Image 1 (cartoon, rainbow over the protein chains, first blue to last red):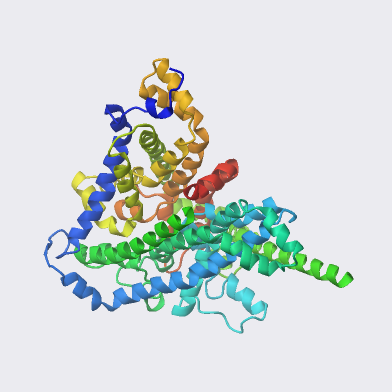
Image 2: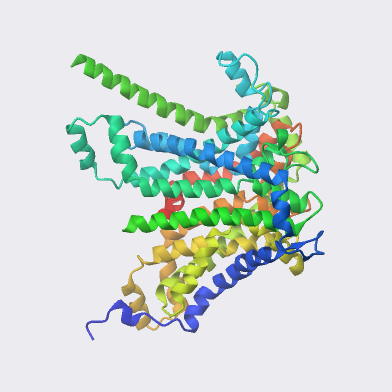
Length: 304
Length: 274
């Protein structure tokens, strides 16, 4: 009687077990599993609105001949290839500096840098838009500082429009990623640093050869989640460009057209083509699946 | 030794400078928002950085263009229903997966976790059609329903339930408590810090949700504050003064929750790497 292990008292998955997990599983099946399969089925169909007919691989064919799709794909890739490394480097450096217990006002600085996380994507986008208007705050400041002679065409030039979006996203998410790095750094044994310091290893080398390798799993995690987030970029570009308001381009030269925005426009702005929009959405599914696979792979390596 | 000391002080000054610039840039848009709320649109787009006298005019414009009490009530209603139902249903499942055993348990669980990979873009069209079939387009229940099924929160609760003491549960069983009583009377109070962290995640997601409400809410009287800010702010010539009032009002609840529950906030954000 005395040796009751937790295992032996663990109840079987009877009526009670199902009552506990049932509601969540039913909801996930209805609102996640069924729709994602439905959208796979739709990607083989074509037609306007609800009148769909089987089209085989026609949609995939259309995909390869659709310049707007390639614009959206290119933009999405530009956003994450530029934005994710810049943001994560910034977050990593900030975290490394803040991790020093001798820094004064550590708590205040950390809170301040984390603060952008509390804003909604839509609200901060509107704020950035208002700062980047033609003769607005940013351009006036840059001219006054002598950095540029004339205002930068943030809203009318494709390159600068993308730059503005990248700056905005970086502002919103750097502190968020920094928190992950700080948490991971707190788990690193300080004596390793002490030993390196006594051996005369300079600060930057300690950062590059001690901190970064030890944080590899977290860096990978943040890279994957940031990339997946950027692949689904919608709220910001939709708010900046007015959601590609009926017929209009999404930003100068469609420079802010992301895959998600294109799918939204295909479905709800242009003549609604659900089948083709579903095909485009599966491009994101595949990209996310590949990335998630990499993440699981890396997580397994972490355990080993 | 003096050059070494000097170098060290310079380095430390550079560190403080860098951190101060980062902190300033992070906080600045909040300051800009509050200052902007007191300035006219023409001053805002000139980049005026001092408080003005436009607050009342901006507020009047905002409240005349937007049925603010209704819009805020819509946002609040959606957030409250989503938060309560997601926390309840997901914690039930997280607890259930950890406590009860079965041959299918791990398979079901892995399948459920696979849904974490599904991007919303692949769901929005079928979900929209599904809500059409249910006759729920333009209702708040349609906004909430897909978010209640959160595999991530289930995962979060299961991870945390591993720390829930077996002895408590066993003792309660010996005392004759039913399974649901154990959950509501013992598990919930014991796990309140987990609930707090999960609350942050769900609250932030629900309050700031944009794409799905944008699709499913079509009339002005059902819209949320996030939708209203986006439609005011994405106009070709937005009335920034009025929009600033909206962004301030929309940010107050999340700021309040952040400062009231800072520790749980960070914990919630970190939840996924535990």
